[in-house]
Length: 158
Image (cartoon, rainbow, N blue to C red; front, side, top):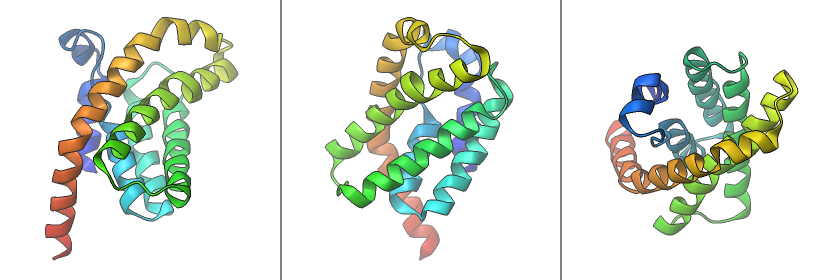
């Protein structure tokens, strides 16, 4: 989780936006989806709050906005795991893609509207293609990353 938070800080900073042409994988969403699929709801929520708190530190948005958004994402993914069986690579791929799009194009713009009055449609128009590319790169990175995280968790528990 700490490595995911450190990578998240690196990829959310202004240097990463310049290096990766305006879009980068979202390691926070990747870590949260993995945690929500493998751990209890309270652990996923605590991890989401910690990563959101770190992201709030480097973002220009309202304080607590990312923390709230990522906690809601973790709880939504956890609730989805109770309704649908998610165990195949393609289902994880789709879940990661949808998680990035949902956070970036629904939850966070709605929060920005509440806090600042910026129209969610303006943000949707402005960032739609960036979040689609970010969702795709996160989902592609998620397939090998889930295998590595599962191995690390298995070695730690053994």
